[in-house]
Length: 271
Image 1 (cartoon, rainbow, N blue to C red):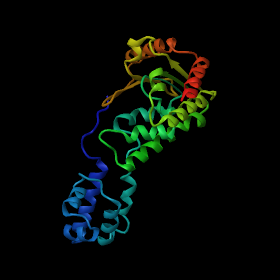
Image 2: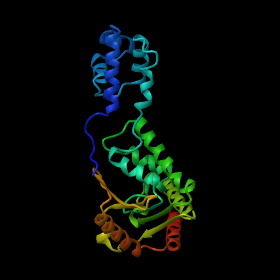
Image 3: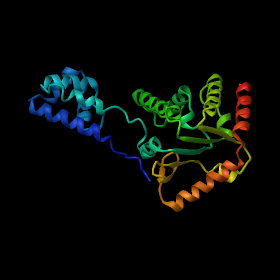
Image 4: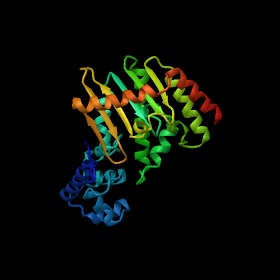
């Protein structure tokens, strides 16, 4: 299981430390750096100690004041927000290489099937709030993931979505209608199936949470589950088998792809 790291990102700490080292080597005081950047002393201190992300302005001015010849400024490429939360990164790497992906989502439209406005609404409402740069990076990363549906036609994608996810608005009415229409379009791809699990069917299983099953090019099998604060990527055959059986039971209760498309179409027309 991957746990969220409560420490500031290593890139922040390393970059801040480099600013401090270059500044001291150049004989520049922190007060002088503060005066040039217009930042308060404690703000610069926090960036040098890695508690805050060094800003582009700090890097630009420190690079010039310390004659770093672009070495400090180049750190900005490593300070971009992570495209995925730390607890999801291992799964995303496995997903990018998988030859078959089957998932079940009880409450949300699957990430690979979300419109940009749906994804943005979800990510923007994170708690604690994310800064604008992180929101933008994660929205763009989610959209890049979706390119696999068309760019990798030999990969099989199977989605089962609980009815509650289709009826729960994310964004306004118009945005949700576009999201449902997007689902219909995705379901028409040759390598993709979208099935809807009606409310009331196998409630004991349907409400247990999301899960995803992956098969690698070497025909290894993984299972992934995710909650609000934790996630786990399993390779143990017994655990993968158990979750595969769970997914199979849910899928057996779902409508067919054709029935699901008709159901989603009617929901969209009602909006």
